[in-house]
Image 1 (cartoon, rainbow, N blue to C red):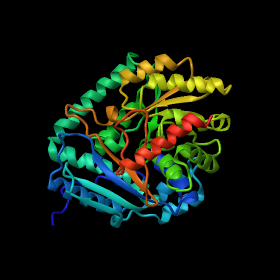
Image 2 (spheres, helix red, strand yellow):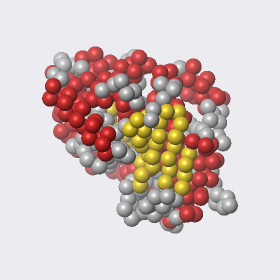
Image 3 (cartoon, rainbow, N blue to C red):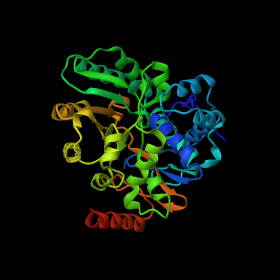
Image 4 (cartoon, rainbow, N blue to C red):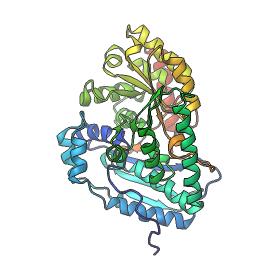
Length: 405
């Protein structure tokens, strides 16, 4: 059997997005018995993973599963304001299980990955797995040195455009761990961004907790779609059209007014707004956009805050959907006098080279033995193995929108 030819890609269990720890703590305290299935999908039509790549990915996942949190890492987590000692103690004992993974060549793109197990475990696997797949693919498929040189040149040009004031981004963070070219590329981007002074932009930090610690910037992230999908749809007693209410209720139970950016598009933003009433709209410090037209979305949220009598200038509109500096600049100029504006920018910072980035995802496809689905504000972002369940969920949402005022 072939042994891995690349050095260890994931070098620390902190090498995960911050929202995995935010959700992980709430899962640990409230949903520790939930079980989930996650499925990998490559959305690029022209990408194929060779058997050698798949072997390497498998070996890299095994290496990841050998990692443990160090006391130094746990102490770092413990100092984050909303992280509780009970969760840190759990992480002291926690380890990834290779037995939860099923990795094979059985897919049109040549790579199939499925993880099954407790939500506590499987939630933590998504981001490191995608980071491994990316780095293996680009290092096997291309001349990596050429790519990293190209990446650095483009990065320097981006930074120059911020230094010159060409683009105004206000507060922005790097969100690119899952789709990065490599660990080297992501660290380079953060190190270069953090030392510059931009006249109209402020680099806040990164979603990558390991690099936030290493580079001394802020770890950024609250919740992902899985939170709303599993909390709202993982209990068969719940009407899934009320997923956002259950998800917000559980989040506030865990965090109160801390750690409060809520995602709006798990089952459409229009349905979300039915549950985002005065209490939650007051408690949550902001909202995150991840699909659909961002200008229409922003106006919708501003109108909603106004209707509730809340001054939107005290709330944050966080944009995180396929952003580059041009789009972010336009959004900032449009909304800056109406609300606080922030950006989470991923692939454009962590994997911009002469070759197209991979469009790969791992999504929850089942929770507690039942299908779960995302119905975002634009078609094509969902991923559910059962079309009948998607129709059922849409019918639930339609009924609610027509009858529940």
